[in-house]
Amino acid sequence: MSERRLARFKHRVISWNPLKKSLFIIVIGILAFGTVIMLDGTIGEIFGQENMHPDIQAYRNRTSTILDGGLLYTDVHTETPPLINYLMIPAQLLGGDENVLVYSAYFSFFSILGGLLMYLALRRYDDTSAFIMSLLYMLSPFSLLEGGLANDETIVAFTVVLPAILIVINRSKIASLIIGLGIWTKMWAILLAPVHFLHSKTWKERLTIIAIIGGVSIAVAAPFLALCGDEFTWFLKYYFMGDPERTNEGFSAHMFLELGGISIPNVVSIALVLAGLLIAYFYAYWKGLGKWESMTLAIVVFFCLYHKMHGGYYLIPIAFLVAWGSTNWKIAARCFLLYVPVMLAVAFAPPMVEGDAFIHFEGSWIVGLIFAISANILLLETTYVAMKEKSFITRGIERLEESDSIDEVEKTSTPGMPEV
Image (cartoon, rainbow, N blue to C red; front, side, top):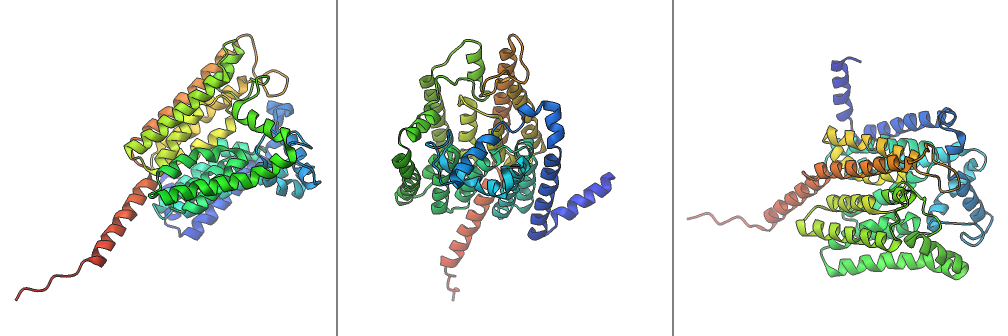
């Protein structure tokens, strides 16, 4: 395609109405994820079938236990919050027990849904930017390859993207409800709660937020505490404090240091994360950063400090950074480039079960540590560059608020009497 034809095509797509753009997002998503799903076998031959779909059996065991009337935690070993397992039931019912590609298609659906949600909800602030943002999110390697290769990170990211968008469009109560449900899906949504709380205008709104999130948490956790007892409390301790016998989880710098014989106590790691988050929240509040900027900062700080991080989870900060990538191709390029050091670090990280890393040799933990630190540096640098200007979302919010203020003044003002 010539440069002139490409420019004409871009102009034509940008000028489409919302329905055409929405259909375009869906079609591109189906084609992109469909291609990855069809290449599943080929990718398995290249990287080894034993490295493909590492969690698929856990998905099947947990969903089949639920469908058979059993209990999570008690009847099947469960290391995740409960709701993520219930969200996977449709994939199991559609044939996921026999064919892993059903799970791939199901997880891909959540990525396409997330991209569509971004466009339709954020187009009020800038239609073109929201459209580009949705495509960048959906076609990110973290989205495309994780979803297309049957990993649940696209569902996890959706449970963060949805309440974040609800927060910026001022749907406070429903955002609080989704945050509460998201916490018991994969916990990540809890990072949004302080921003939601601090940006509320009245203490009545803040108390409502606490009540809704607390009420949802009690409603979800109480039945499992009553029915599963020690097994459920073990999950809570493991999820927040970790398991001393399982240090080789994820690919964080902490994990590689552990492999090299340099141990950082869990208490120190957790204290570091909490201190970093407190600084991020209050810095954003003190500087008067917008809601989207505040949530982005908190999430990036968490990713750089948390000691149990997995590669696919990086789709979460990418979902926020592509708001800037939609108007700055250099930031968009960084969001895609981040996949390289993250996946290289993953390649040097040992699996959670017994066995060696995909790339393993004497002292290989040092190489993995370098890639893990490089990923964090690139993530921080991308965020730093992005934060130099407001996202199109915040600019759009300010523009609408200014317009509303002018309209309010015009409505309340009365024209002066003409001089006699």
